[in-house]
Image 1: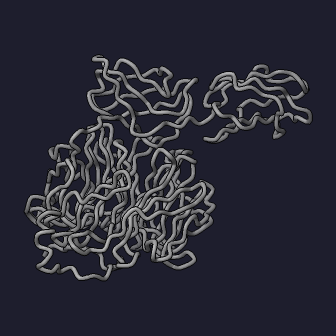
Image 2: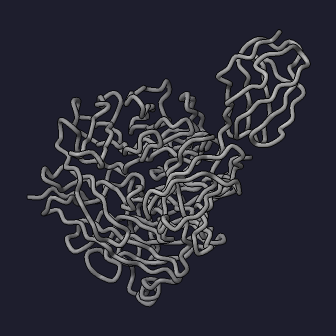
Image 3: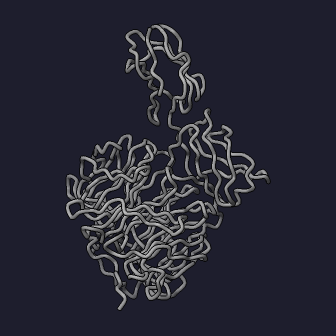
Length: 555
């Protein structure tokens, strides 16, 4: 018999009646219909009886690759009924189960989505269980290899805990992750090295970390904090941890979904439980000063959804989109939008069949370059094993994105993803023209120009149409030359490179210069300060710091 997994009761289930009184019939008939102009499409139904996989994984979101496919994982199904890695086109065609998990060698039952890495263009992920010690694996996956390869980089021990979320890329282009028991770790793609970090997350984590615009990684813990209701925490690439917010219950509890961020730098997310009816919340977290605001409290009553397992998508249109896993008009959860501070119930899932086939969504929505939103449900569909679906706005915002994080550096090749990219005639980073090389209709490669400024990446088509990136690129500083490479105190030095906009400090051998001018984002004129020592020259910006490869000699 095929093994099935229903909604995980280990997650704190809110307490409310899911049977609705007959007096709500008219209200339910109204809320079952979309209140906004988005349209829902069931694009593919998973099937546990074949080798394709079923019950799509729940931690993270679908990942777009350079070939235009969306990649994900399933918890069950496949040749061994231990889960699969799959790809599918945004229109629902081209489904292919690329990898069948096998238990002891490579792991099994992956809850985690996949992460693309800038360094090598491969996917990285985790499996919940299996491997040498039964607690799961960390792996690299290369679907372009012949044959397709999956390489186990680390076998997790019982003490380390199971990894139910994928590692994510930080601005140093290493990957960072956290397990259900709070173990934090780093993966170096160039070597495949796994390194445990010195501190444990507070209370363990079910969600992947999120790289924010300040260069830090932010995550959530399902427990811990001053009230043991869960936390939002900040982590540096050195592994230093700090609690940013402790949930109290009334403002939410047990966050299990990934965070997102708007253009103002505020973080957004959900809690699975908490608030007065224990149905969970959607929240905004301002960081300066730290202040949490509840955007919506779910209660599961009157057709309202509850138990948001997924996070919030901060979409290009300026609105937020999410889903609940429980309650709703049909007890299968719903899809919703938060716009201008107002909440809109878009669709109520109908389970197997119905006009909104699907249910129990656990995968956070992702925005594709065609302007539509894509997600997965763990239930519903023809076989009851989950669906791949789209939520299409009435006016999609066509856009581009890039692999694999918001921080880029001078002369780094950046893989830009989009549609019809063979028609591109120019690429700019913050209005500065870049050299680029076409790859296919779905990707191109551009080099970060020396004068690049923080801002969106824009491609211009042969038709004159300009298509902008979903997020802003943030330029990391890089020093490529010192002219001259030595001098006395009071002499002038040209520091040549890129990413120098907003420079806050220049140092010579660790001694701060009191006189420097940022001539362009690619050039700083600095005066060698009193007390300067022979050593590296450093440049510090809001995005990060850089040291020269050359040694500056103080005469």
